[in-house]
Amino acid sequence: MSLTGRIKEFITAENAGYKLGEKKARVISIISQKGGVGKTTTAVNLGTVLNKFHNKKILICDFDPQGHVEKSLGSLIPDGLEYTPLSKVLTKKGGNILDAIVSTEMENFHITPGDKELSETEGLLSTKIGKEFIFQTALSSARTHYDYILIDCPPALGNLTINSLVASDYVLIPCEMSVLAFEGVSDLLDTLEVVNDRLNKKLKILGLLFTRVDGRNISMNDLIMDNMKKYFDGKIFKTQINVNTAINKAQLEGVPIFQFAPSSTGSQNYQALAEEVLKRTRSKIPNTPQ
Ligand SMILES: Nc1ncnc2c1ncn2[C@@H]1O[C@H](COP(=O)(O)OP(=O)(O)OP(=O)(O)O)[C@@H](O)[C@H]1O
Ligand SMILES: [Mg+2]
Image 1: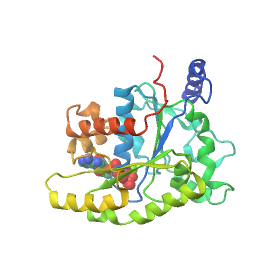
Image 2: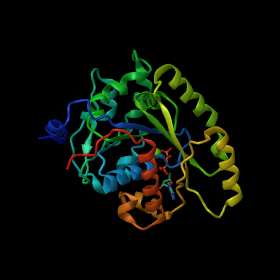
Image 3: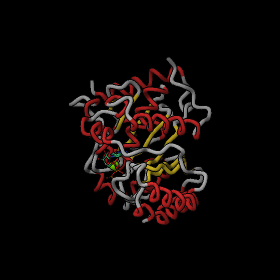
């Protein structure tokens, strides 16, 4: 039997404990049109910490054709899994994200594997009626099964990112400590405002997360923080992610940082971030039944 089949079966059996639709995942888009700011690193390490230390059922959807989520977690993903590529699910009529999901060696931690074809999907979506709502519809049954769904967006504000925002409750914005960080902030905020106004009224900014922070660059860090406060006052995470080579090495090995170097700064930072995310999204989501 295919893994896709197994996941669906598992989910159906689990529903004995829930009424379908009772359990609503918190859906978080991790976005920035800037490349290399830590979107994938945050999706992978926040997701694995929420699963491992907080017993949350997690799905990470990889919306980036680069497929870095699967690469970052390569050692947890068995070979030869059967699934429908995300690009197909998004472009066929009545597509369901459950078909694009595979399980991993971590219990209750699932992903959609990398799919290069998503770069074509970006263009194909333009031709579809109701193009902004395709992912929201395809995600509706998955929303009833997970505690958190994290979407690793591509470094662009195109159709895929808009689809992700329309299906989301929150956005988490990683921001590197560099003067280039200001480039595109107003475009990003404009996009969020338009999506909020026209397509998804419940979308909220969960927080701006400073990533790859080098504590030695005090004056640069202060400058960036002070200026970002003007845009994101009250929304900046207290937790910052420091520069930590263990994060980079973990990604090369295909394992989450909590496993690769449990006591590293990177591991501690992502554990602190998870606590903050839980607080900011606190609501009636029940824990996974044991
Ligand atoms: N805190 C950190 N310390 C050291 N290296 C880091 C840190 N965060 C991320 N990196 C490294 O920086 C690189 C870019 O990170 P990542 O892939 O998460 O960015 P991204 O925003 O997803 O990029 P893209 O826009 O290309 O998808 C990776 O090689 C990653 O290992
Ligand atoms: Mg990425």
